[in-house]
Length: 352
Image (cartoon, rainbow, N blue to C red):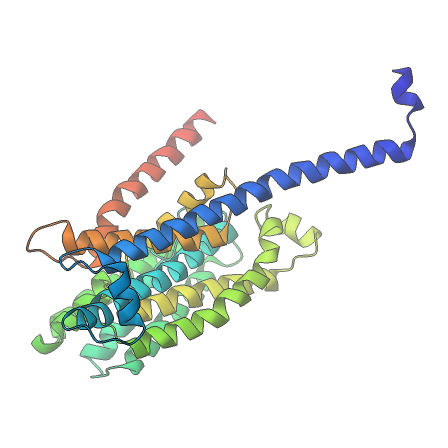
């Protein structure tokens, strides 16, 4: 005790600072390692999706094809089918993963994902209405989808008011049901020639998208993702609650900006590939579990990319003579995860 009392104040302060730095350094190192592992997982899943399957492509041939060399048969399969699907899967997975994690973290509710609160369905309803009732096609349909997602998000926020949590989720579920009714009505009016296109907006698919669409999506994400990274500095305070965040100098406008960026990320993902079910819902909780309970938007984006790549590969090759859209596969695995999450939440409430 005497030795402790005799220690200089400056030395004690330095020791405390060292303890704080070490406490911060550990999670930061774990996060960097996690992002590195997830990045390797994305690269591995991307390679499997492009190189393997019903037509195997060797790595040297792939390099030659990407370099511009024409290999009969292989060049067409890689450049027009496998590679665009894989690139789109990565971009869409990033958009859905980051967007979903923003929803769940900002609203402090694991159920508040774009799938549950109707944002994805709003985009789909607007898109199929534009196709079936307006006769639109091409970029105009994608813009309609983005407008539908933003409109539903604004409506949910208006209905829920300043409240988050289950009130916002309930408002979102109600609007999602309304959007589903719109989709069902429009589907009865759709022309038989547009059925396949409408089904893509209902299930989600990375098939049949041209390079121009992929390039535009990449350009948009090149703007949205850095903006999200800048705005996400407020997440640490936002997770503590609105009052605490306000006390730390993080105002409501910063939170609303981050939410709006999340809506845009999901909207452009839906505009490019349709509402790939449950990717936005699954990515955040998985990344958080891997990161020892801490939120990581980058990790959620990488998890989303892996999910879409693996689901697309499984849908294409897991079943003989059956090519399933990626949204069907993610929906089949996402629904049990949702039920498990609800059961866990109910159990934890009863224990409390």
